Structure formats: C-alpha cells, structure tokens
Length: 374
Length: 176
Image 1 (cartoon, rainbow over the protein chains, first blue to last red):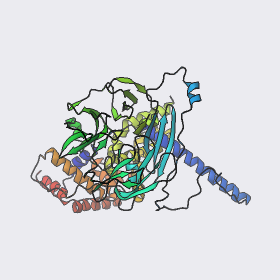
Image 2: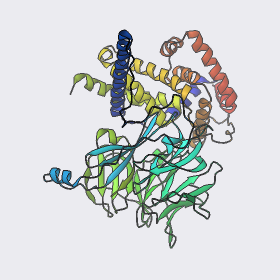
Image 3: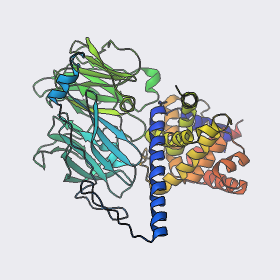
C-alpha cells in the first residue's frame, strides 16, 4: 500500500467529524462516576460489616422504587424497559409567588429534549426553570432506541424502535404516553437508521419505514395502519398541526396542504455541503410558507438539527435576527419560531421578529430539542 | 473559579477537536465518537489533580479512549450503512474529483468498520496519529509484536474487504 495516500485518506475521513463542546458532558459523567464509585465503596463496606458481624442483611426496595430485575439481558418486548417520572404540572401558586419581579417567559409551554448516552436515552420536560426526566429508555447497545426516540408535537406521546437482533438496523415500533409506564407494540421490522427515521404527522400519526423499504403511516392513537399509499420515502416533514407537508418528488422539493402545492429550490452553502450527504426539511411553518432545513449525514445516525429557514414562495433564505451558531430551528403549533443556539434560545414570531431570549441550562444546551407544547 | 477546573476546561476546549477526530476514525459515527471522548475526558477529570502538571493529560486521555473503544466494541453493535456496491477503482487518475473523494471516504469507512476494534486502533495510531510501534504498544497496553501483527492483519483485511482501495494506493504508490 501507498501509506502516504492512506494517511491522507484517513485524515480526510477524520475531517467529517463535527467539533462539539464536551466540557459539560464530561463533567456530568465524571460526577456520575464519582457517585457510582461511592455507592460501590459503601456497598462493599456494608458487605464487610455484615461478614464481620455475621449478620444477614436483606436490602429491600422501599415500596416506591422499581422491583429488582433478574440479571442478564431481557429480550421481551412487552412491557418495554421504560422508566418514567411524572410530568411536573405548572403550579399557579408557585408562579404567583415567584413571578412578581419576573417578566413572563416568551415560551410558557414545555420543551421536550432528548439526552442520549451509550446506555440510556432520556426525555427531559423543561418548563420555566423546571427540568424533569419524564421518560427514559435503558438499552443494552447503542442503536435503534437512541436513533429513534421521539416525542409527538403535542408532547403527549413517545415512540421509538426497540432494537432487534439484525445488526442494529431495524426493530419493533413501540409507542406510549409520556410520563406513563408501558408501551404498545405497533409494528415489526421497522427501519431505525437515517437522520430522522420516525416522522410525526400531527400528534397521532407516525410515518415509519419498513425494513423492506416500504413506508407506512401509522395511527398511533388507534393502533392501526392508515390505508392508502403513503409514498415511497420518509424524507418528508409535516407542520406541527400535520396540515402542511414538505417532501421531495423527483429531486424537486415542494410543500403541499393537499389543496395547493408549491415547488421551491434551495442550494446549501457549498463549502459546508461538501461534508454532508445532502439536506432535508426538519420543520414546516403552520402556513406552509417556510421550512427549516438541516444536513443529512454521511453516516446513518439521526440529525435533529437545522441551520436555515427557506421561504418556499421565493426560494430565498430568511435572514434570522440571531447571532452565533444555530443548532436547530423549530416552527411551533402556536406560531412561534424557536431558534436554538449554542448559548440559549431566541424566540421569533411569524415575521421573524425577535420576541426575546430563553435561557437554557448548561446540560440542556447539548441536548436535542424534540418538541414544544404550548 | 477553581484553578484546577479552569485548567481542565482549557485542556478540554483545546484538545477535544483532535480527540474527536481520532474517536471518529475509531467508531465511524459522530455520536459514538462524542460518547467515547466524553467518557475518556470524564476519567481524565477524575484524575486531574495528579495529571494537570504532569504534561501527560492528553496521553492519558487517549489511552483511556483506546481502551474504552476496545471494551465497548465487545458489547455493542455499531450500525453501519454500506454504500451498496463498492466503487470501481480509478487508479490512473492522480487528481480525483470531489465526488470520487467522497466515494473513497465512504469506502474507506465501510472497510474500517469491518476490522476489529484493536485492528482499527493500531491503524489509527500508526497511520493517522503517526505513532511508532513502541508508542502504539504502550498506548494499547500490548507488546510491540502484537502491534506489528495486528497492523499486518488489519492491512491485509483492508485489501480483502476493499480491494479497489488497495489497488488505488498501490497504483499511486508505484507512480511516485
């Protein structure tokens, strides 16, 4: 082999990685390691004491925690490995106590974020200064679950693909109610690769791709497939109310509400585009005029980010009144635009005028924003 | 701010991009690379009080990273996207166009994914980080002989799983 050429190609491949700030994530993991070590040390000390005194110790759950699980991996689908915490309801009295000196937030609803680690995916519900983990999926291997875990636009449902044993490329589609235990098994052989393998149409319908390549529109509320041909691809996106669709036909992007259809064009920044495998729509405004666009990676992992807004009536990129790196742009069901930046959120109205900033805590900044429910 | 934490912050911000590049070659995936570097940095943070003035923080972090990758690989499957049929080699073209470069990178990544974690690690250490065999052995905690044999096996496997890459490298090499 020509090793110099090999070195160059390795360097070229390494250039594909996107630099991210891992400082906060590393510190959180470090704290967790410290806690685990402390727990392990305490447990070891307990065993030593028990052995020394000849006392048989029985450690029992206190009645509120989950029952002990048998050792070894579980292959059962129902019930799935879900851990939940009740969603915090906004307290009127608490707001009344805390709010006099504070202006009302421009985002009064709940934002749902996805946090993933190598062994867990968690949904955080963030409202005001409250941040609660409302759904959690532990998994044995990083794969389908982390790549598919999603929240419906109204923040009420969760869905994901539970990894099967065919190499982390497909599995069983499951759906449940956020904050509640249990899930319903909906469909088998569902693809779990790609930048966005599960796509919501409104908050009841979910578009998924079968292993065979066939697309299926599934009514999660009724637990049945929607009749008719949903099209051959999942490279599509609906507005939060499910009315407007952005899709691609014969290489040409368009938006439609089934009464009217409009083609548009978009050419992404050339230099950056060279690092990616194309772009796709990530969010659609309620009137179908604007779409936010994000990159499609050359790897099969999910991308919930977006970086620009395109006006589909003019095919021009909208000049957004925000500074710094944009991480995602989401059109909400209450006609706002949430622009997630590296250091927080800027909320815009439908004319892209700033309504104000919303602070994000350091841990949340590095999570993906999945949904916003007013 | 705690001066130790401030030093650690500075280390993380300066060295993360380089660590991520190696981690990306080891894992073939952005998120797995982030997880890998994050986990290695967390362990570095826990030992920072003895590492910060030793000048060995990066070496320690890389060592942790390579060890974690090998142990993770044993218990996790990494989804890989194969680009379908492998591209035809174009060995005589000394200035391949961008599309061809992209195809080559995809092919190289798919080929690397077929290697074992240890084989991938030795290739990244030897040909991306330009480490000597002794340095690679020290980082991986194996003998120099193991590094030699793993490198040889890894290159042989690359030739097998992606013959067009080997052919391209050989053709260009013979033209030098």
